[in-house]
Amino acid sequence: MKDVVREIVNKHHNDPASLISILQEIQTEEGHLSEETIYEIAEALDISESKIYGVATFYTQFKFKKPGLHQIKICQGTACHVKGSNPLLDVLKSNLKIEPGDTTSDGNVSLERVACLGCCALAPVMVLDDEIHGKMTQDSTSEMLSSLKEKKSKEEDRD
Image (tube, rainbow, N blue to C red):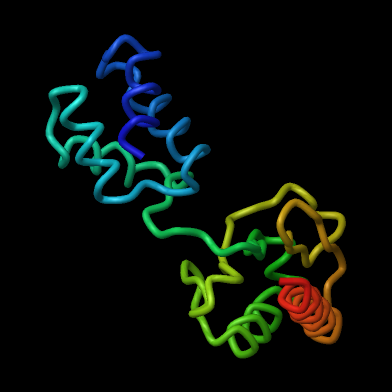
């Protein structure tokens, strides 16, 4: 990981003004920003870790926990809220046994609430990995989770 951080920081000429770009690239490469990575960036840029955390925590795009293999984002925007996204969130939390912002204990699924996915005509909406699921119901949410579990079982059988 240290080499990846060094390479990205060097690409930006060790310029602290490029901190956001550096954080974005490292997160793309690693999936999240670990404590170790934050320390390495601070050392390379000769700035404090608290300054990096200050910038990174300001933006919701940065994650400090390793994401699951699969990521579910549920829209909480006005249209989705009015069309019933909260009961869908309850189905997700109950089935996955996690809260938004968490990852299942097996590392398979992460759950995230988002302000708006920009698919208001399809409300309520959620995204599984990069696939948009619109006009969701409690039943279709449960079916989506079941197919995800089946997919995981098939993957484990191949291993």
